[in-house]
Amino acid sequence: MEPVFATSQFCSNKCSNRCAVAAVQDRCLKYCGICCEECKCVPSGTYGNKHECPCYRDKKNKKGKPKCP
Image 1 (cartoon, rainbow, N blue to C red):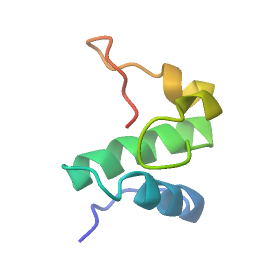
Image 2: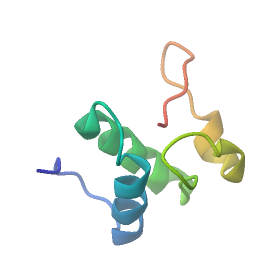
Image 3: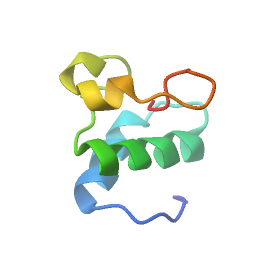
């Protein structure tokens, strides 16, 4: 069951792939979707490769930690 949030089909597909092996799927999909909508890209693979999308890589949460999975 996927969480409900308004994202494009592009982001939905990319985030499903990105979060495929995440321990906390719903949280991964939520933040990936937010980052994808803002940055218009998602790094390839399930982990790392953030150099492919600098906007996605550089987003930080309130605590200064990476926001995007």
